[in-house]
Image (cartoon, rainbow, N blue to C red; front, side, top):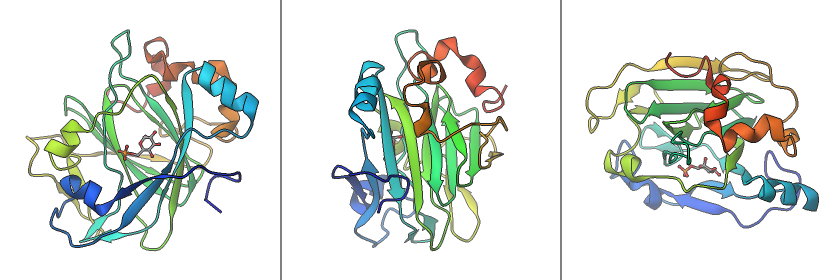
Length: 237
Ligand SMILES: O=P(O)(O)OC[C@H]1O[C@H](O)[C@H](O)[C@@H](O)[C@@H]1O
């Protein structure tokens, strides 16, 4: 059974080591094979699927088994989201459904870098204008994530590919190593998100999936400019 999901699953999108070479700390790392599995556009019922489509939202599950990539923890490739019609970047909402995660966020202007340590059951919002990667820092436990996100955009991978990953690499000896392809960037700000709370410490009731069909709770994913409070305590100011 796939962690974080009880029902039937479509075939996953798979990212392999080959797909990730351009963003690894050690691009010549000789590891091979699948790194993580993306089950996109899930719904538990036909009415839920209809509601998600009508509200331009997608529910996905991502499964990241543990892996040592030449001293670097396994991670997602990394991307930014474009701006919505009002000029505000599309956000995203994650829940850790199994294991623990580090979310490494960086503002597009590179004036803010945030590392969020999130335990099972924690929720993390990706704020407008921030790129993100997710890291599995465990030597032996699989990380599973659920996310809700707008279907109105496509992720942008260009900066992460050109600059060989995020601004920092998380190594499995505990080091956080600055990526030498970046200009000077600020030191990492650290935040923690625990079960039932988000990274700003606010309580979150129910599972992420329980928000499906709750228009008020999820409207910020398509019109983030109307809901700046969602990101208070997460962004720099
Ligand atoms: O697109 P990547 O950088 O590989 O990251 C992987 C994740 O990205 C997005 O946030 C998607 O909504 C997820 O479904 C996906 O698993």
